[in-house]
Image 1: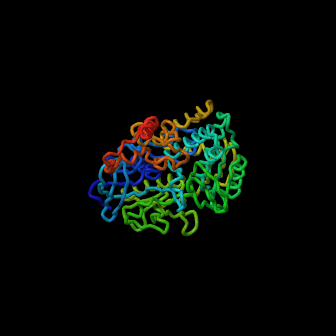
Image 2: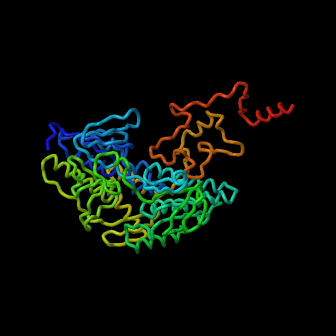
Image 3: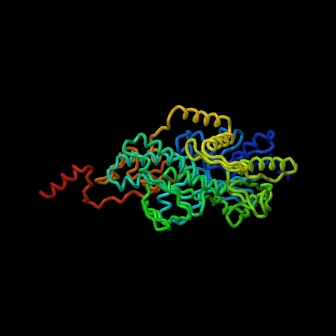
Length: 509
């Protein structure tokens, strides 16, 4: 393999595989042996196993993300999306966060854009639901849960109060179970600050379409987890599907109906849809076809790993592939980087082979389940194992120290119970005062810094965004037509209720 000059390595995606591969390559490459470009919409890598603790207030959200530009010194970082790849032409089309799209030439491709939430065509899901894959979603859910407690404590209508205190989680995998357990634990602790609320006033519901939760562990550990959740008053509905979520009205396939102010969707993932806009081979599930050496099957100078790739699992039978877990992604990144370096230096490459070590899960403060190499742990030992394992996997000493500092402070001080809801749409208050015509209608009152409707994730236009930026009002976007002028002679609308009454009195006289 010859390139005539130092090859240009393009890494698509800055998640586990992208960041760890770039980091290892940067450390191992000699001088001008190759150049590296990483394209990622966010400027950071999110360590997702710590998102539940960030949502519960045990960790500072900034400490569960790793800044790419700080870690990958010597690499070119492009903040944007790869919208198309023509590997035959060795060209990627990139849409930066600002400005026009452009084409980028490369010699070697490492494509690892990861996965996105796998959704179903459930009426109301897009409007009411929120996922749990980003730091923005974790922050939003923390604010949402606490703001629902604030709203319920001040509500006089029993139906409004009941809806605000109902939290629905759909999906019983690790993401759903840990998010549910940590947030419920936080909310239970927060109730001590609300004289008019008790933990029994809240309703937490988990809906899972299959007959068990936590499929990564043994059925016995899954059953233990169900019993622990039910002991805390959490309703676990197995073999149940959601049929509709319109306007927050939940309809289950067993006929049950109830209203929920918060809906969290954690029912699995699927490969990033951008893979369909490449000339690389995909399998029936939309994943890149990969070899055990982490090369794209049948394609030269193309490598892949992680959630988006169908990597053969050599520890299992024919046709088995590795699961979409951080455990595999981190190890695959290491092997991919080593193989790519060996290929550049004309050395033999090795296949990826790793037996699944097991799983650990946190169920709230001092509570957890773990199954490591067949050894089963419950309660406090499992929780400690969860923290120890993931602390060892968080990249950089800087992040490890900050996480330990957060945990140490938590030993002496209780969690902060405050909702900074305006983070979801920080311009809402400014728009309200700057646009008198959009003031709330009579009988409605918007809290300062909050949208007029904050009953659930769909109440905020920016709730489902993972870009960590507010969405301006529609009229502020470039190219949006201005409102049509009123016909000549049409009186201007009154600015206040007093002016309206005065005008009505003048008409009557």
